[in-house]
Image (spheres, rainbow, N blue to C red):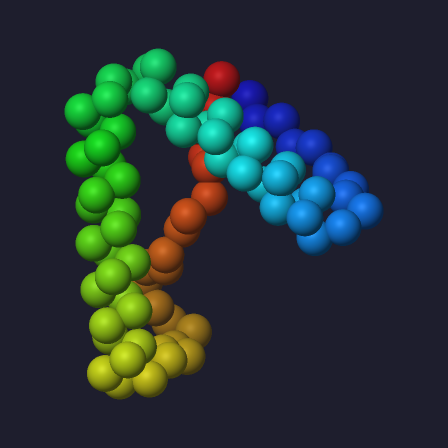
Length: 80
């Protein structure tokens, strides 16, 4: 079951703190469930994917193809 919460912040600093807190909670949950080594492998794979995507944009410019079959997803999608 996924729970969504709306968070309002009075400044960009406060908003950044909220985002950091959510990311930290997601990471801690993943490490508890899957272990440190598996989490590090997952993060390393995501970093490589992002780095490759950045290199492709630098070489070829942005890709604006609506028929792309994949995208970069950096969201927290863990369910409880």
